[in-house]
Image (cartoon, rainbow, N blue to C red; front, side, top):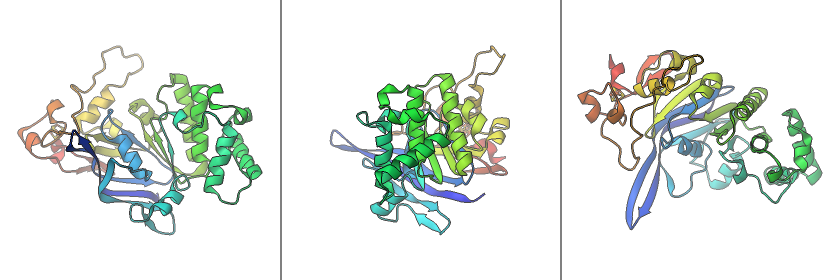
Length: 327
Ligand code: SF4
């Protein structure tokens, strides 16, 4: 499969001024990632592990206090590789929403409460496709909403007149109206009930299939990853600590943290207590030495406290950063 985004050793840190003292949060710290055409790439991990920051880097939405400290992000659009942070902001702006689009956690941050949905679509389309008349922009919105199987009457509604689930569907429709090559979704089902969550995830999957695009999906819900992700990257303390085909990770998770994430999933008919990782994630201000997971790891060795694990290849496309895989 063709690569659409290639991420090489990126480091993105928040540099904060706290009472006159500069503090650095290593939110993404040396991440490599390939996003492949026609695939769903899941990113899993607990809150505060750097998932959302990684998405901001992929979407070229790095703003102070977040800084790109090192590494490269390439968009591969068929005509070659575009070095996303080597071009100027006006060029990056053209790629946002047309090459890669972003579905945020909360729909209200994108939908203007005082505009009807159709006018939000019109403004969005006109600002990205110069020369479109108002009528053409409305028609494009209607066609897209119809294609997605959503009711056309939502175009005449204000955001507050729609349910949370429908607002999130509208946000997804807006993010995909320009037919981007990559859809980046950040916990798109937060605050929705289970049935609505399923519908929203299915809508994303349907669009990804129909448009032949890639979907990068951040969710802490391993059940969702099991259902729709083709590839899965597990993040911990700003790094990807295990990656591979989703079925391989579920069948043979090699990192103790991934094992806990999978064990914490409820299973049909199994009433035993689910196991979640002991303790809590470390502060990104002050990471443990060696393997960042060592204070929580039941298998830790002396080496783990001192040396950061390197990445081991443990199968086709399956990699893990854990000294247990050293063999
Ligand atoms: Fe546990 Fe050591 Fe592996 Fe880290 S490197 S996950 S501490 S066994």
